[in-house]
Amino acid sequence: MIARNGGGYYRSTLLDSLSWLDHGFGTRQQSLAAVRPLAQLKQIHSPSTIEAGSHPGVLGEADGLLTGEAGLFLGVKTADCLPLLLVDPDARAIAAVHAGWRGTVAGIARRAVEHLERRFGSKPSRLLAAIGPGIGPCCFEVGPEVAAQFRDLFPDCAGLDRRTQLDLVEANLRMLEQAGVPRAQVDAGRLCTCCQPGEFHSYRRDGQRAGRMFSVIAIRDTKGAGAIPAPSPKA
Ligand SMILES: [Zn+2]
Image (cartoon, rainbow, N blue to C red; front, side):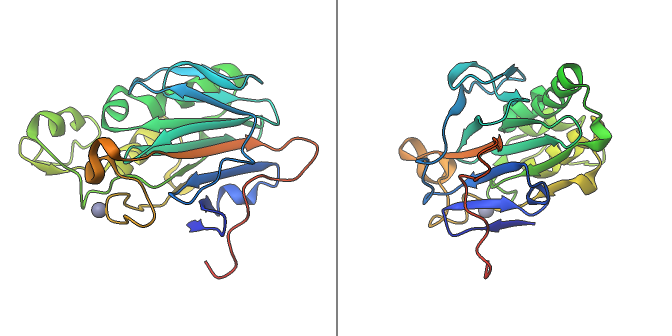
């Protein structure tokens, strides 16, 4: 379950089962004051991933960041695209991914899993993941030229040569499943950014003037305290 906390973030109850982990999916009300040091990317809707190590700042052009180092937040910016957070509970390695429709088609979720495997020896069958707020099929109608590019992920769907309500969350669940991450280990929020103007920025709704939200994940350092407040009890 993805639940709102009192500090302007949503959190995954699945990822909250790991006490050494801090994370949050940003909203319009989020504060980044305590979220540092922060590593981020110049996001380009690609399948490229970069290992952050312990380096903050803008680390290059890519759409996935990973690290096994404690004390560094990995952040991705979104305003309709999906933020994906991946965790290897055995190796204590993490990844943050920006997945819009282009990155999804290009395979960014699978590439992030493969990079964790290669770098940290992660077993996909052991990974946990959470998918934050993004544009829902309710608000994401695409033309046949876009829909057709999802044929590999939706072989069961007949109508991909017509205008289609695209479900980016389902597409990424299927891609993670193909990469070996069981669906039961993925916490998917299905919160639509376009439907909730008070809560989220949305590029499709607000166009060029849309703001961006940061989703972040970190391995807690030895000081122990997390930067992202826990979900409020009533949420
Ligand atoms: Zn919607």
